[in-house]
Image (cartoon, rainbow, N blue to C red):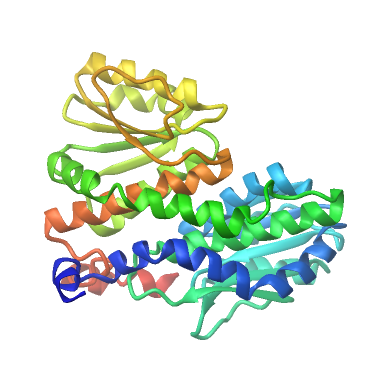
Length: 359
């Protein structure tokens, strides 16, 4: 333990490693409140999931989960847009906010707006701290993360949203997430297996830390993973990283790619896999480097390295592909010599700017 602590002195690492177990614990401790809320949400007209930053990414994965398993019209909306621009709400709607600390200004305003419209509301947030966001039901994830780069609170928020989608599906149609014990056993086991790629991603971080820019692309839930990992790279090692959907990349952004860039294609089994892998051919033409993160179902790409994670249903592939890329992000910071926990507040210029004080 002492050797691991000396090698990994940052809280971000502990949070990443804790995710498989935390995923299960979040399910267990919220079971009653999730089922109670799901029984009411099952008859709602629409369900909106709102959040900002990493919480918005969790909301978008939640939208995919509800589409797949909940049988309910669920939509992810950025809290800022939801609070300021709509959509119009009706008393039969439900609104679920996601906020790690429960203090984000626009998530609070979004839920206030929902309550004023007579909507049923819920909040997915961490344990401890002062929650300033009001809601009818509160789902708790994990203790407040000590790293500013949120990881375990993201996966546990998705755990709760998956549980909620499963319960809503059961109330509406009699079926939910497939397989007995799927959320409690198969997904945590897959996350644990994905953590086994650490040695490989540590090597990749050393090899690619000097790249001009890191591009991450994927389709559907994997597009969310691409954006989430790009955000984590920016937050922790301050490198230039961009995450986007596969089709967005092809419609303009690819024209600013250079040969000293790295592409990470998030391409597990799913509707977007084939299209995403086409980008590997384009990267080869311009001389860039390419890494495919998949689940063994993809067609091998010449001149591209492959990182393989366990195969799971597509919405959850967003998590299995995420875990090794979180570790990649962490090791990029180690190689760069930056503090992945600090949100750059160890730099006096950014301490004066105090972005976190405006959130």
